Length: 107
Length: 231
Image 1 (cartoon, rainbow over the protein chains, first blue to last red):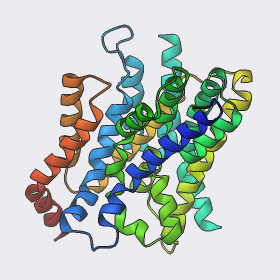
Image 2: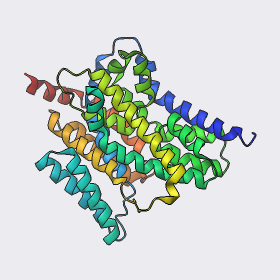
Image 3: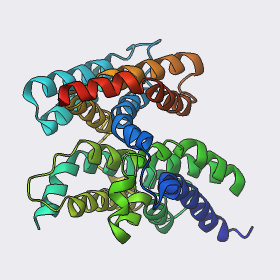
Image 4: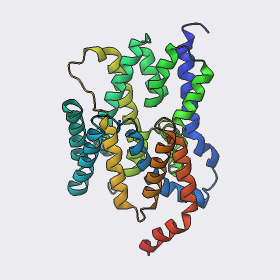
C-alpha cells in the first residue's frame, strides 16, 4: 500500500469498526418495538457497566509493588467520601484528582 | 441557549479528561511521524481514546488493516452494551440520533446515564449538546497535543484520574437512584473475579458478557425489588 494511503485507510477501518459496534443495538432493534427483555437490560445495565468501568480504570494499579496502589485507593476513597457527604460532583472530582496527582509525586 | 449551558455544566469533568488524554495522543502521533491532520482526523472520525492510543504504535510497526480491524473490535466491543439503554431515545432524534449513536463513548455514555435534566428543558437537545461538546473537547485536545504538546510548561501526569473519579461519582449517584443493589454487586463480583482470573488486559469483555448473563438470570429478584418500592 502506498505510504500516504496507509494512514487514511487505517482511520477509515478503525472508524468503521467502531461505528459498527456503536450502532449494533440500533441495527438489531432499529424500528421494531423494543422487547421487554431489552427494556429491562436498558434499565439495569448502566449501573453494572459503570461499576465495571471504575474497576477497568484502576486496572493498571500495581498492588504488588510500592506504593501498593495507595494513590489510587486513597483518591477513590476521598472522591467517595466527599460525594457521599457533600454531594458536589465538581468538588469530588477536582479534590480526588488533585489528591491523586500529589500522591503519585510524593510517594 | 439554556440546553447548551446545561451541557457545558455537565461536561466540565470530561473537558479536563479529554484535554489531557487528547494531548497525550497528539504528542504520540507527532512523535510517530504522523502529522497534525492525522491526529485531528482520527479524533474526529474514530473518537475512541484507548483505541487511538493503541492504533499509533500498531501503525509504526506496520500492522495490517485486518489486524487493526480485529484490535478495534476487541478494544471497542464494550460499546455494543452502551447503545442498549438508548435505543428508544436516540431513534426518536432523527439525524441527531445518528450522530449520538456514532459518538457514544465511555464518557458520553456515563454523562447521559447520570444527568438530571432541569424541568421544562428540551432533553433531546441537551443530550445532543452533551455529545457534541464531548466530541469537540476531544478534537481540541488532540489538536493541542499535536501542535503544542512538546511545549507545555507543566507536568500534567495523573490528571487522567479525573475520568476514574467521574465514573465513581456516576456510580454513587446511581447507587442512590436505583432501588436494587444487585446490578452493582453483580458487576463488582464479575469484574474482580475475571480480573484475578484473566488479568488486566483481557478481563473487560468477559466481565461485560457475564454481567449481561447474570442480569438476565437475576431478572425475577431485580424486577421484584424494582416493583416493590414503586408500589
